[in-house]
Length: 281
Image (cartoon, rainbow, N blue to C red; front, side, top):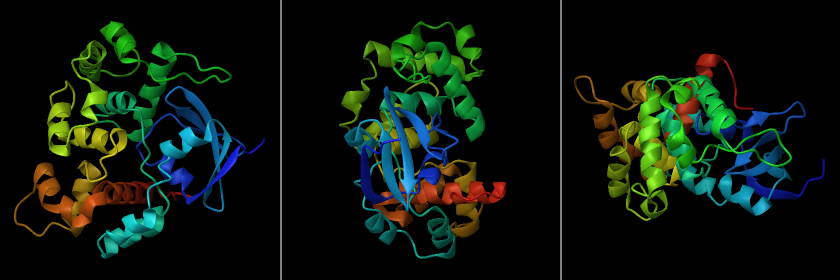
């Protein structure tokens, strides 16, 4: 397969695509990864820690994988403690990618109380049933808001969404109508953006922070799920009583600096992979 362009900054491709921030990429038998950037087909590989664009538009892929993020600068802001250093050693090269905002929002609405494998199954089912075909591949793009808005709740539930179906549909209707203008929301500051997202059906603070981090590039966003709550209580919380996720976020997110979202994802992926006995490479 002809390499279109090699891209220099370091990346840990497996960790980046298997850390629970995106759910449709698949690893091929030759070790390359195939997926979509919006509706653009791409095949990527990794050689000596460098990303290779095997198929697709190099400039689009480069932006998607956030190769402009200065990882050394990001790492310099991480706290110098055992938990963070272990996560950094394990996940070095993991990048927070830039997902299309609607795709990210919809996917994380369906993520409630679900593990990564289940979220992937729902994402694939929605793509197969409502997504558009992409030329020269069997993959389908994530369904547009109008397609989800027009679907029946029964059809959405058939994709494994369960009680999440009405929330996803209600949010899709707001986005499709322009009431929730995600493009305009990209210009809001973090506080206002979080409030706007939390006003959507199926979006609480944790999902909002995920969407801010993965869909809007707000690298200070600090999602607190059960994994991070457990890690924070064990390694970072020094208060009395049982802290709430909101208390953890408000008190501890600042400890990880302006790139707290990166620190969160490294801690999350390290903990998750340790329980599976796996490794990001």
